[in-house]
Image (tube, rainbow, N blue to C red; front, side, top):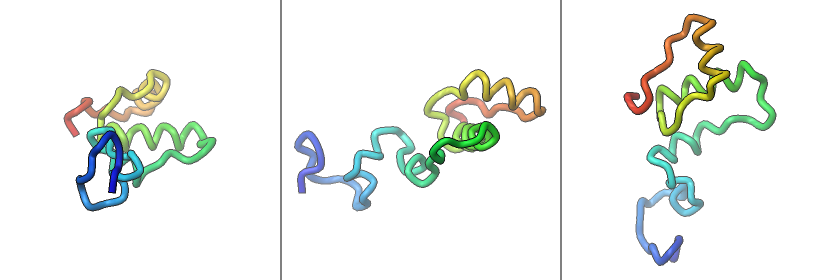
Length: 80
């Protein structure tokens, strides 16, 4: 089965086939989608868990500011 750009083999799970594994932790992203039109609190919670589990990108500035206001320490990026 041809997946993309001539790649015919890979991990035996479907996330690779649908292109989710483009990031270092694509499986985490696939299992933890951010809902459509989330509330701000849902976004803050998702970004906090994302930073702890994946850290593939920085937490948005407005989310980081909210976490600091709430007294929650930001995880160090890439040190999950």
